[in-house]
Length: 231
Image 1: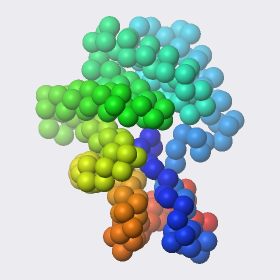
Image 2: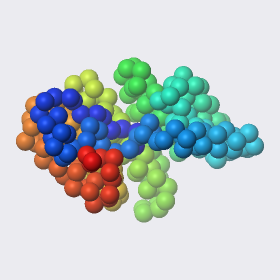
Image 3: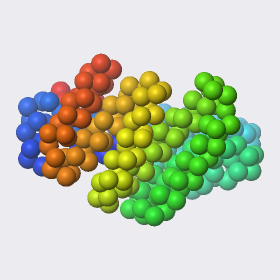
């Protein structure tokens, strides 16, 4: 959810938007949630945190609450995510730590602090890779780590794309895509295909951009993902 870019508003792709082929942006972000639903989520998490023990559940709740505030009140989000990171370190829960690091990376990226974003992303990536390497093949922990790696690779790709470092952006997007394909995560596949298309569009390589956009569109249609398809 958390690593999709918006397409450039150039006339070429505006034409496709007007024709109803592609929407500006692909996939659903937290900011797309109806306000009532988002408020309910925040209130529910706050209620859970009032009685939460100092355990993995509390880390999850803090990470989720921090994400809910990320685009509406980023400074509050940062404080909550740092609490999640601190608790994960205290109870020595590596998965929760990696999630908090990645979320703080998103916070820094949104602030335009790319060096800090990359620092947090690479820290999260290192932890998830260690979890994957130490997990039984096909186990739940390994699959979770693999999902974390794919998400983080996509996040790193976003940072490089925003800085117009297109070779690095493509490298990380393709790595994320490969992992999502291994996981059979069609939504993740579609998002990465769309992001790869964005990079080619940014470089005015429209044939390649269209190829990846249409592949992403086909995947979105299969999933019934109306947020990624123009009405």
